[in-house]
Image (tube, rainbow, N blue to C red):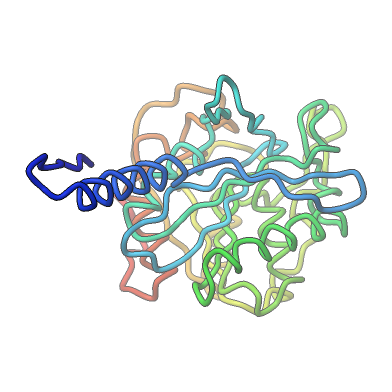
Length: 279
């Protein structure tokens, strides 16, 4: 935004206009940023906060897949992070539809290797970290409903935390849900949500799944079996895969269907009519 100052104005008016311009510039510069909070003893939890939409209607706390390690950092005064994950690269779509997005990184004690394992995501330490993040978001956006949104292995976090956080959270969105466990030979072994009882989540739950998801731990058939109890958005089509079947640039990550998929997710969050099929 450009603030034009008319030099025929009185000097006090010109000064006020320039101060206003600086305030607007600073607000724009800080509209999206990296936030780091102290959580457990000697542990910090960071997240990236997108700019706040003018028509703010909800907060989405996003849990990326794999180990949740986006390597959020500041370099040369700029915030940088890995942006390949479906939720991470779709963050602007949430903002477009009135949802400010907070993208969680792995906490400081889970930065080694590939990040958070399933047991950590299901445990008390993760709950403590995320509770601190939610407390911060509640102060920033009072009385704005907050949703947990997880994709792939991030769905383990969203489901487990949704069951334990109760009414602090307005709802849970599980995309490309990790229904099945990964074997010991995998670089990311763990139970996933294979033993999880979704009935323990007492707040609204939405499932989102691509019908052609080829990842063996996230079959569409498992989501379809739950569609009698929970709403399920089924996604069709998109672009040809550019990664492995369990990676982000495939049907598992809604490649080529990101905007349409996020739009229907947000419609559900905001209690608007939403499509059960995205084609």
